[in-house]
Length: 426
Ligand SMILES: *Cc1c(COP(=O)(O)O)cnc(C)c1O
Image (cartoon, rainbow, N blue to C red; front, side, top):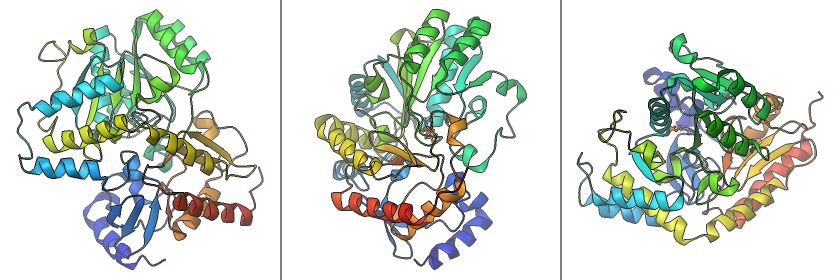
């Protein structure tokens, strides 16, 4: 595999952009080497500037559940270009998208559109504080909720990849409003509520964690969060930025039968353009300005192009429930390919191979994965045209554009790696 053109561009990029990238994990620091610079995408494939072709399991880190250049999304974008790119005034399509979000995710009675998942969680947290009059947030180690100051405590994704436990630049007083507990530990949540229940504004959780690799909730974990928050007058915020429209049309809350007070959405809801959303109970959401005193705003929020893409994406998914069956079927074939000694976690089309024999149920157990072996696996797969996230602490995503041939090729490459590589001891 030749990456000479990517190497040239990467060298130039590093003189102009920190690390040469506009989001840290793209820089391949967790695996080493040069990130391929992408020229274009089509369906399940990515093509880099050196002409290499890859089967893409990153999917822009989650949004592209229909693959690259999905026809319904492209058609909606083309139509919208004829009317304009931004108005800063309300449009009917925003209302249509809000209605469709509320229909797909029934716990959302009212919704506000924003531009990124980070904005959605930041706003949901502010609303939870404003509504409850309390300051503390409970989160879980290894969960990532965007780069909101108070949520960058023991966070997953790039923080886990780069080994940054606590970022600089967050005032200690902000970090102190966050209590980070072990994922899947009901005992830890019970203890913190027993001690400080009347100070806790919200519990925020990834209902299927994807940012420490894929880690599903233990049976009863989400139910316990629902029960404890209700009992203590705190809000439950389910962060479905990754899982929304991914693990089911109605997200993980549909899959596990949980009704949160607030939900955050992102990634798929924008169809590959920058949209995210937060919403939930109407009595809470009406406290947001201009109907209430909790302020939140955005110049480009509800941008017509992004709304058109999101609306086309959700309409397609709602009209094609077979997409989820197909994703499940492809996912189960991939997870069945791992031998003993490798732990595969998977929920639908989200999956991670951990290089450990131990079950992975939280951040601590995720870190038992042999990272050197992961790096070897990552590069082995990349060489064979399979593009995985360049970090152990990320989930892989299958799209509806993946073909049986893609899945077979991926499984064959993975099996060849497992057959050759001897697991490290200990
Ligand atoms: C990606 C992600 C975010 C942040 O979204 P951005 O659009 O990157 O700001 C928040 N929460 C979860 C669960 C995510 O996966």
